[in-house]
Amino acid sequence: EEKQKQEAKAEKKRQEDEEMTRLAEAKEQEEAEAAAIAAAAVAAAAVAAAALAEKQRKEQEEKDRLAKEEKQKQEAKAEKKRQEDEEKARLAETKRQEEAEAAAIAAAAVAAAAVAAAALAEKQRKEQEEKDRLAKEEKQKQE
Image 1 (cartoon, rainbow, N blue to C red):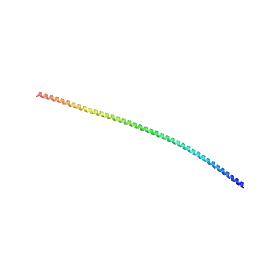
Image 2: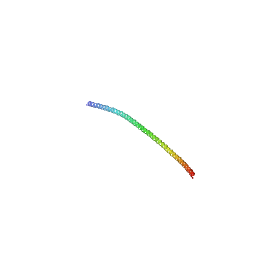
Image 3: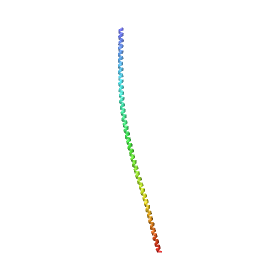
Image 4: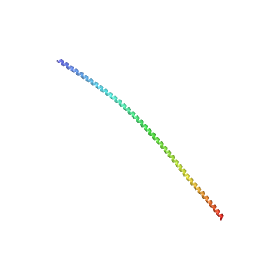
C-alpha cells in the first residue's frame, strides 16, 4: 500500500510537472506570437507613416506648384496692367500735346487775324485820308 501510495504520488507529481512544462511552453509560444504581432504592427505603422509622409510631400509639391502658377498669373496680370497704364498715360500725353499745339495754332491765328485787321483798318484810314485830301483840293479848285 505504501509503495502504491508513493507510486501514485510520483505519478501525480510527474503529471503535474508535465502540465507545468506544457503550460510554460504554451506561454512561451504565446509570448513569441505576441512579439511577432507587435513587430508586424510596428512595421505596418512604419510603412503607413512613410506612405503618409510621401502623400503629404506630394500634396505640398502640388500646393507649391499651384501657388507658383498663381503668382506668375498675378505677375503677368500686373505687368499687363502696368503696360496698359503706360499706354493710357502715353496716349493722354499725346492728346494733351496735340491740344496744346492746336491751342497755340488757334492763338497764332487769332493774333494774325488781329494784325491783319489792324493793317486793313490802317490802310482804310489812309485811303479815307487820301480821299478827304483829294476832295478838299477839288473843293478848293472849285471855289
